[in-house]
Amino acid sequence: MIPEAIAALSLEARAEAERVFHSFTARRGSYICYPQDEAKTLYYVVDGWVRLFQLGKREEEVTLTVVGAGEIFGEGALLPEGRYGVFAEALVDSELLSASREDLQRLTSRFPEVQMAFVKLLSHRLRKAEERLRDLRFKEVLPRLAKALLTAMRKGEGGLEVTLSHQDLAHLAGSTRETITKVLGELAMSDAIELGYRRILILDPEALRQVAL
Image 1 (cartoon, rainbow, N blue to C red):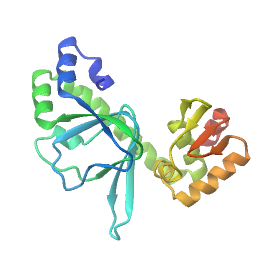
Image 2: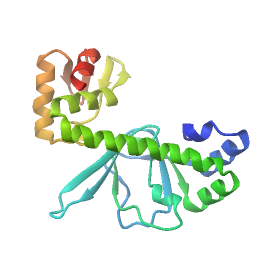
Image 3: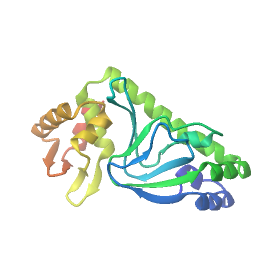
Image 4: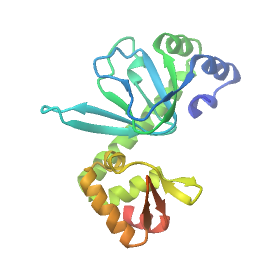
């Protein structure tokens, strides 16, 4: 599987991209890159969640964003030189694609339209980051958590469910684990969700959508 934006290109460009991108699994809690690392590889998320964060002055972790399926990170690899500047941590077992800087340079040189595909992917990331900043500034934790639950829910054996931990949801919603646990309890009391062992069952997605507005 290759990024959707590239899959829409010509057959020749798509075939070359399939040769350039390689799949691998990043295990939950593993680090994919570090701030000081030279950005030699671009990453694309096929399935899963990857948190991008930095350390503050007191060594506290500051989450910049959480990238999910269909998004890229490590975009420094699209430039001639540079470093990642962030930590990238897999929140869950995640299926990724990777491509080296050298292969990407050859790919974009041979097929200039591929550059536009990457621009579209980066524009999506930028819009998402701007939306996250607006939510953090203007929305309370409850609507941010409702939005995170809707984003993370997947169809499981028991229906729509979220398998992220409370800490993972805190990263997505821009809050703390303690606050998220409290607000999840409130949503459970309203019968919008059901809390279970290592999963959250979404009982009323529409109610969450109304809260997330």
